[in-house]
Image 1 (tube, protein in one colour):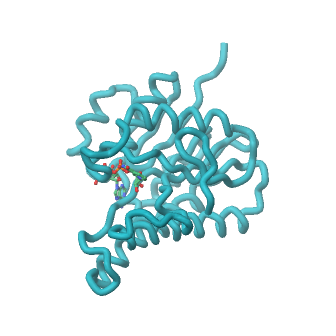
Image 2 (cartoon, rainbow, N blue to C red):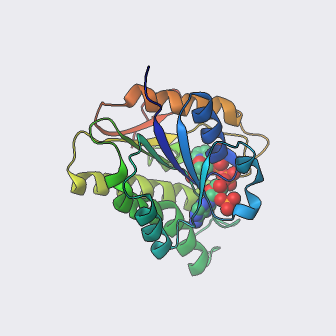
Length: 228
Ligand code: NAP
């Protein structure tokens, strides 16, 4: 008999985070998941078997407090999924200082702050730390220039992840910067290419495939490598 694995999913009220929880539960994982507002997390609560914690990832004291509450637990997977699209107008002259600051803080700074505080909870040797990046964060990607600020925020996330991994100097930790595909969620829109279930099935398959490899990889939900 194998022991069930433990996952911690950050940002699981809806969309891909909620989908990740469903896929992991179906695979027999134990899941702890965070939401910003438990009053709006009916879909997650309805799954029943999930330990739900409240967290706004931008709130640094709240991140530290959750780290304290979870201390002593060991997670096989920490998945930082939460992210935002940013302002409607993404031209450099069309967005405000507040909007740009919010976008870059949530998408690139807060995930790494959380990872720094939570890395000690990840199982040594086989644990996986995953970030929900995007192919749009590849600096080689010419598409979607109307989302220039979002693209730059995901490139910044990848760069911050690279610095974090380098400073950590722990070669056995597996770190994934994941592109989930273009997915039908509130962010991806109705016209996106794939549904949440297809995406999260692929993402979890990649987590399993990369377990124990060690190192930092930028891949999509099919396991294809993406150029930085
Ligand atoms: P979504 O439907 O808009 O969901 C975003 C999730 O992030 C929600 O659960 C939201 O919580 C949470 N969140 C946002 N800011 C947060 C914060 N400061 N603290 C904690 N939670 C926060 O988007 P999605 O499509 O599922 O996207 C999930 C991730 O995948 C994002 O990082 C996104 O950039 C990335 N991604 C998506 C696609 C796509 O096609 N959908 C493609 C590439 C990458 P609330 O419910 O409280 O707002």
